[in-house]
Length: 72
Image 1 (cartoon, rainbow, N blue to C red):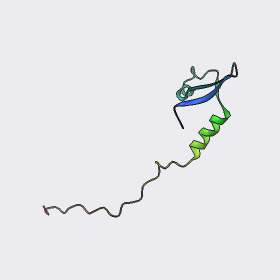
Image 2: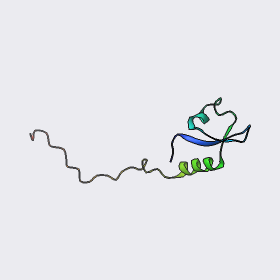
Image 3: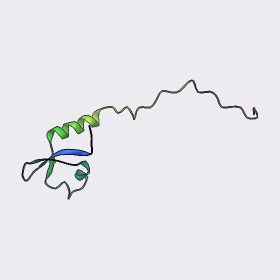
Image 4: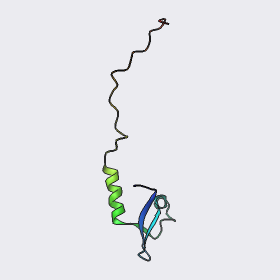
């Protein structure tokens, strides 16, 4: 489950911590932090997994035709 936090190691002390994921987008916030090997592997797997939301839905062939002009 992705809750907006990632596992990281403090490279100065070796302590494992949970930090907000957006910290790795900012150079000052991620200074001294490294993502854990498990976290890196999870992100690679998430990036290579086909996303169902990106798939285009099949064309709907049961859609009724629009009414003709002047039919009302």
